[in-house]
Amino acid sequence: MASRQAKQATLVVLKEVLTEESSDKLKRILKKKIKSKLPGWAKWIPIGQILDALLPEVLIDFFEDIYERLVRPRMRDTISTGIEPLDDALRGGTAKGELTVVLAPTSKGKTTMLINLGVGAMNEGKTVYHFFAEQNEDLIWCRYASCILNKPFPDIVKKPKKYTFAVQEFQARTGSKLRIAPCMKSSVNLLRAFIYRYGVPDALIIDYADKLVSAQKLKDFRIELICIYDDIVEMMREFGFAIWTASQTPKNSVNKKKIDLSDIAESMDKANSADNVLALCQTDIEAKSNDFRIFLAKVRNEEGGKEVRCKIFRNKMKIMSNESWLRLITRRA
Picture (cartoon, rainbow, N blue to C red):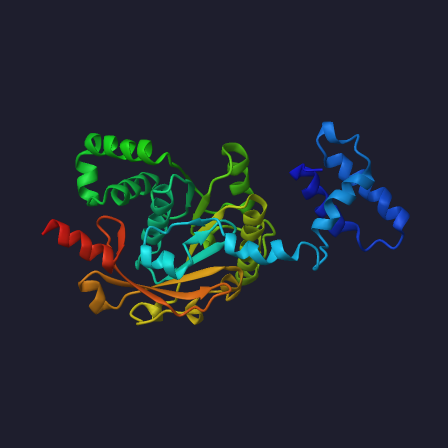
């Protein structure tokens, strides 16, 4: 029984009725509720076959297929960040089924980093969806063009025809896709609706998740954030794509040399939900020379604490490792 609808329906109903005392009553409820949610072609399948097919995925025998379980972590479906030393630190990049959270103070490169992650994925021919909450829609378009072409933002705006052709050539060369939509005050379920409508991407960017709303409409914002991140993780597991989002750190971290998990705003549970936490660090002195550091505050199942030194060029929406920047200026010389 491979229907995703059947699996989801079963798991939802199990949560509702597993407290029932009577096994006969449980069976009747399962049969009625599950089959009411199945597609028409599947309703003839006996309830026993549905449960036999789905329940093993809920309660799994540890000793069964142990070898496959042990080798699976080495088979991550990675997506390049576009920054080679960062890929190395992340064991090949971020991966499908992983949530990556970018931490930074206001105006310190959160959106720039997310766009660079998107362009890094598109360079590999991936499909990326970018949901934004704060920026103007046309501005996001121009920023992606600027990052893709490594051209200053004002030049892109002055010569739109020239750079339109260049962006189209990039798409033809890579075979990548990018869809962009606003998400301010949207719920995770609305993002799901986009995915059902347009298909499953390789990576989904939420700029940023703190601006979403919980379907439960809770009064305590911190608890609501926990629910939002739980919903994001559930959606990620359902579809199997990578998710990249960002979170703002408090004002007292603006000129801090190293930002870490203690600087995460509102709720530490955001860090608990994340597989990777990338903290963007830049002091005022570093800003004068475009120096920029990405501190790996958390990498699940790996030691964090590594730091990647980069250059950030905000007029081009571009982040480059120091090594790539040196190679570039050497070629130009």
